Amino acid sequence: MKFPQPIPIAEIAKQYQCEIIGDASLLATGINEIRKVEAGDITFVDVEKYFQRAIHSAATIIILNKPTECPPGKAFLLCEAPFEVYNQLVKTYRPWVPLSATISDTAVIHPSAILEPNVVVGHHVRIGKHAYIQANVTIAEHTIIGDHVTIQSGSIIGTDAFYYKRNPDGYKKWRSGGRVVIEDHVEIGAGCTINKGVSGDTVIGEGTKMDCQVHIAHGVVVGKRCLFAAQVGIGGKSIIGDDVVLYGQVGVIQDVHIGDKAVVLAGAGVSKSIPGGQTYFGGPADEFRKKYRELAALRLLPDFMKENRKKS
Image (cartoon, rainbow, N blue to C red):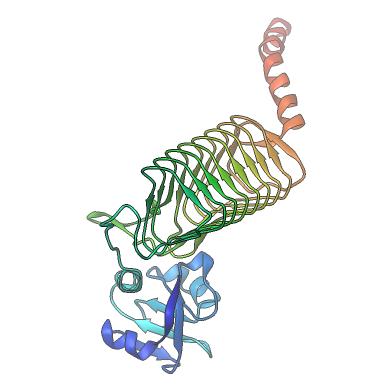
């Protein structure tokens, strides 16, 4: 998530009673969780074993809860509860505002776009040329819809990230400061759900086609010209390459990468990153010829064991 304009970290430190360690003259240009930070971003860390990962990330400003040596060109904001400061910053610069109309007056919709009855369009949404949004679709805040995009009835775009911080009292919800970006010529089937990112973007690449009841979780990046059949589910922050085909009921866990032109057959479960250019099957998914040989061997196992018992 980028700020509307750069913010002096001295101003942030004063607002949240933080001590500055390092370069107090820095400006923050955005805020992001650790996996997606860029130069100028703020991130946070509140577990000491992850300090070095945060410090050596691309983030320029790190909110933490224990003094440590700061490298040149960076700054630390020292406080007791880094997550609370981080979450409050997101809420301040991406405040939640309930809708009071079916289509927000802050939405920008191209005149050539077609919106059927009962379409709900949230704050700061942009809808491009010749988009076709069917009845009963909800497009939530800060969603970008490209040109020639079709979204079928009942889909919900820009739902909150399913992302919580666990604490002794239960779970504290993160404010979703990210967006959904749907590029040109994408088609989304009926009853699909696409979560916005926690602080970065969920992206659906140009020319990708989705069947009905597909779920895309927070921060997922889908490449160009992908094809997803019904009931595919992709876990948060996974990266799907270009020209990937996922057949029906494929499940992909969080934080994995599927390479370009991979094909995953129906019902498979992707539990680790897989290279492109191959076909996969099973759970956990593996190269389909290898998986079929394993299944064939498994079918022969009872007879093999029976024969062995006779010999013994």
